[in-house]
Length: 371
Image (cartoon, rainbow, N blue to C red; front, side, top):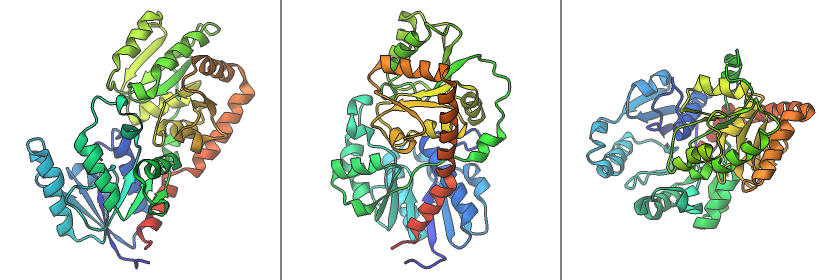
């Protein structure tokens, strides 16, 4: 067991704009660090970032902030910056343990480390991406999971994928779920619903998210609900155009509202006012929008056989993500069955109470301090 007072480094470069609300890995890193520091004053933390502004709120007696001096050169020499300069800087800091929360460890960093792996979608189906980098998929990622002393998988789904695809020993991998900060959802009021009656999709518009099936299901469900609209909130990703083409083909331009990327407060507002969140993704390492919806006391329809089914079972409606008829039926059931809605709200919030960032931070700290 490592004694108290260890020096723990955390790579916080993914934290860019916490006030607006970072997404993805930046969101994970921000809430993990925030909750670690609220609970642990015994150990020393060194936070490494690309700007002091992104880390300023973490100032604390047991926290040192380090900004990479060569960040402005990254766009000119990305390999040298990410794998040589950053590795040397981190090594010179002489941390007892370094946590890399963004799937990779710099190629030339070999000190004791913890690595968080968020998903293996690039391995599960490379066709979901424009092009999977050979360097990343064949050298950097395999090397990172090999040299990490401990790996955090954000779900059993990710752990099983790591074991199956990379033959890693089970004991090297600890499952620590992502979390939610319930105070965020208590602070933002539902307010006046200016959008009327709607169902919500939250996430990047890309093939893996399976929005085409959602639109087909929506076109079937609205036959009985002429006032219902579908709101899509999230940035446009790779191959987004077929989504908007299908909306036009099915004459749904007046029934589907695309908002693009939304701020944290707007996201919570949308979740709180939605009839339900529909998240039919083919694959996720975790599926944070589902947990966020549970925290907002909003019913969820999501994909069976995924990480969302793993942590949400018993509190969400599960569907076959390839079956638009089944999805349409699930939407209609939630809109018409008030008992079902109330049960999903209650069970969902109970689930969210157990899956907080505080719980994630406590488990992560325990992992840091274990042998």
